[in-house]
Structures are given as structure tokens and as C-alpha cells.
Length: 442
Image (cartoon, rainbow, N blue to C red; front, top):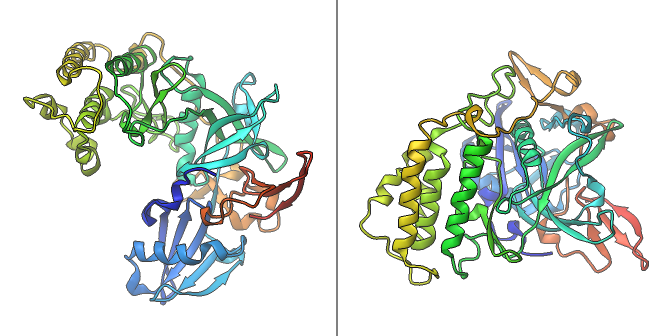
């Protein structure tokens, strides 16, 4: 195993609260996600602790690795001790998300079965480094993105279609394949893979030279996305950029914050119209300016302490000098980076007056809407709102009816020699000849 993101991240990065509901008269129950073990557990806490999220996260971290895989509810004391557990379906409020059918995607797209992926590292929330053997039999490392919450369904549909249909570009991390799993006898798309580039992001690996040509490549890539495809990345930043060591070129990745330029959303589908909607405050030109400023000065407070609408790139561009951090390595004077940025920003300001909608792009990227009517039994009605999934309790007697994600915690890694962890969360033994042996529960 590698760096293991969850070994050092803060509790509020490892855990998240999905919903909070009153629990009789004895407190509150919070549906809590653990991104590390990929579990959804109802946490019952005393009423006076209802706002202490970090308390809940720290308490859960102490014992979640020791819970049976079927536990769906825990009760903890005011001191964070585990009082009781339950595996009864009526205590389970987790909604298993909707996954689209493989048939809703083009046939020509490479398809990988989740059980054929072996986990190598955990890179972040719902993002893993995995390996598999493609057709030629050569081991291949790829990044696996997936989701197991209902609030990711719509956004993921748009992201996966955007990345999958995007033409190959020398400065965009390429799509690799769809990841499927068998659900109720049918293949469903549960995630996708992209090429893995070693060396870390520009944020993680600050010791290398940030070359002027990287900025020029980034500018060209943003123009390609915005003006040719009508796609706005929406989150250009040092942690979404890598350098390909084979080509010595900058690479853009992670399109989960992207949008169609000027788009108001899929207004014909009430379940999806809040996704891939354009936000003018997240325009790529502004974020490129902040990215270069942050790389040169290492002042990241602007991006981390303010919302996008509070960020004004003219303040950075208006500074008389950008003071280079003494540890930053450049191959050109700071003034040259600023000159390139200023020239580009002025040009784009004029172009953007005309190209203000994805339909005006040279080759606008498009894809179909997500068909929910094909599987009405996998969508839950809640008044006028539809939840894109169904209660896990419904599948209590049919575990093959939904996708299981639970896996061992990072603290249990690395596994003993001769064992490996599949992307399904299962631990398998390898025989001497490499064949899989007994499968173990996460």
C-alpha cells in the first residue's frame, strides 16, 4: 500500500454527516459516512451533543474498524464510548444510490469488472489507485473514481459522460474505462477509471520546477475546454494538476466540479437540473490566475478561506509585484509569468463576450440525460422530491440487489503477504501460481 490518505487526514475529512433526525426523546441519530471503510452507519448520540460533529467523528474512529460488517447503527455515550450496536434492518436509514445500466453507455467503451480491480492506495474520498490486467496481460495502474451516496448520482452521470466523451488531448488526463458490477442480475456502472500519473500533484510535490511552458500549456488547455468543447473545468488549482514525467507536460484532471458553459442545467429532469450548471464565479481564467499566484508565492489562504464569489483576480493582478517564495523553483522571471497571464486574460475578456454559452463553442460536447424511468423501483419518492436510490433495508434478504462497498480500514493495512484487497472490499488469498483462493469478508 502507498501513502494512504486516510492515515493522516483530519476526522472531518474522513467522516461526513448526511442527515440528522430526532431519535425518540433520547437524543439524535446521524447517518454518518466513513469514506475510509466505505460504510454508512446511523450514530445515536445524547441530545446535548447534537452539534458536536468532531466529537462524533473522533468517537466513531476509535471503534468502527472493529464493528461487524453488518452493523448499521451504534449508540455512543457522552464520553464517546460504544454502548450498543444493531444489525436490524429497521435501524438502517442508509439509501443505496442509483447506478445506471451499462446499456445506457456506448458499447465501444472499455469496460472493467470491479472484482477485477485490486486496490493499491487510497488517494482521497471515493478515489483509489487500483491495478488490473488489460487484454494484453500487462498490469496497469489506474485511478478508480466511484460513489456510494445518493447525492453523487446526478453529478457523476455528467462527469463520467464528460470525461468519457472528451477527445484525447495531450494535457488532459485520459479516460480509461467504465467500471461495472452485477446488481440483481444486470451490469450497472458504479464508477470509471482514468490514467494514473506518478509524481503527485503540483500541490503535493512542490519541489520541482514550475516551468513557463506549463503555464502556456495550461492556458491552451483551458481555451480548448472552454472555447472548443464548451466545458468549464470549474476547479483549476494546484491539487488538480500533475506533470507527466514521460512528456514533461502539465495534465489537468478531476472534472467533478465542471459545467457546461452558460448552462442553466437539465431543466427537463428535476432530479438533475442542479448538476453541471455553470457558475460564473468558478470561471477557469480566474482560477488559472489564482493557481499561478499560489504556486509562485505559496499563499493559499485566498482559495481556502473564501468562497468563489469572494475571490477577485484583479486584486492579484493589480499587485505591483508577486513575491516569489524562496523555496519555489521557476525557469523564468516572475514578470514573464505575469506577462503571459495578463495578455491571455485580456484576450479572453473579449472572446468571452461572444462565446458565453456552450452552444457557441466550436465543437460543443454533449451527451444524453440520465434515464431514471427505466428503473422506477430504484428511485424513492419523498413527496415532490425523488431520492436517487432506495433503502438498503429493502435488500436485507437479497444482498445481491445492491452494491456493497465495505472494506477494511487503513489501519488494517498493509495486508499480510499473499493477500490482496479487491476494489469490491473483499480480501483474497493468492495461491503460489497466482490463482485466487478463498475470499474473506471486509
